[in-house]
Each structure stands twice: as C-alpha cells, then as structure tokens.
Length: 156
Image 1 (tube, rainbow, N blue to C red):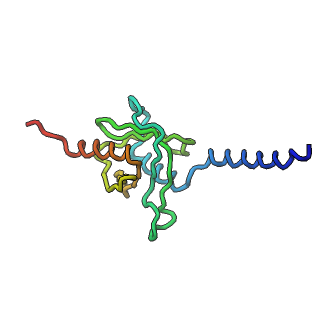
Image 2 (cartoon, rainbow, N blue to C red; image 1 turned 90 degrees about the horizontal axis):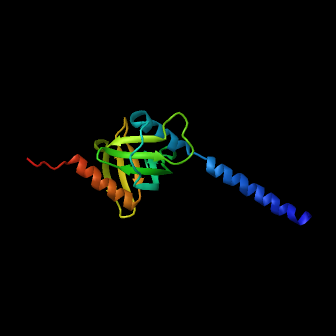
C-alpha cells in the first residue's frame, strides 16, 4: 500500500492544477471585457451560432518589444455570430464578475486593422478602442461582413 502513496500525491496535485486552470480568469482580459460590456452588453441571444468555440485575443496591445505588461491581451474562448446588424460575442468560460457574458457590437463599431494570413486584427469602438485578434476563418468572415456593412451598395 505504501507504493500507492506517491501516485496518490501526484494525482491530487494534478487535480488541483486542473481546478485552478478551469477557474482561472486573466485579469487583463476581465478589465477589457468589462469596458466592452459597459458599452455593448445585451440580454438577447443571436438566432444561431455560426462560429462556436473560437479563441480570440482581447486587449489593448498584443505584446511585442515595446508593450507594457499591463497592455498584453489574453486569449479567451467565445461563441461568435455575425448577422446583418453586427457581431455577437458570447463568452464561453467562467462568468466574468460584474459584467455580461454576452455582447452585441454593431457592425459600424468594428474596424478591420490588418491580417497576416493566420491572424486578423480588428478594433472595437470604445473610449479607447479595444483590439481583438481572431483566427483566419472567423477573421475573414468578420472582415467581409463588416466591410459590406460599412459600404452598403446603393441600387439607385
């Protein structure tokens, strides 16, 4: 029975690490999400979810040589929907404290910044714009939809 004791200790530690990882909520993400929540909080839900389980980087800056540590963004998992009116972001994690897990950002408040074939950057309008970074499939869809919303075609 003594030979099981080290294995039990390892399993206990792994269990604690698993619980901590599931409960962890990055501090800088919560601050940025709270700012967005003040402007774009909604109690409604989109009709459907076209992009489930998307990993999106949310924050003011994205690291790099000159960025301050407090400006580095954090990854978070979202369910995302694009419709005629704009962008739905439904946070898929532990509920952020004092802010909504659901946001609706009108299409006119999302601005395409750049892409490098693997990641797409957008700015969401706020007192100081908040940058988000998406993967290529979602990024291309947002870019296409928001560009069309900003430049509607006139049939006159």
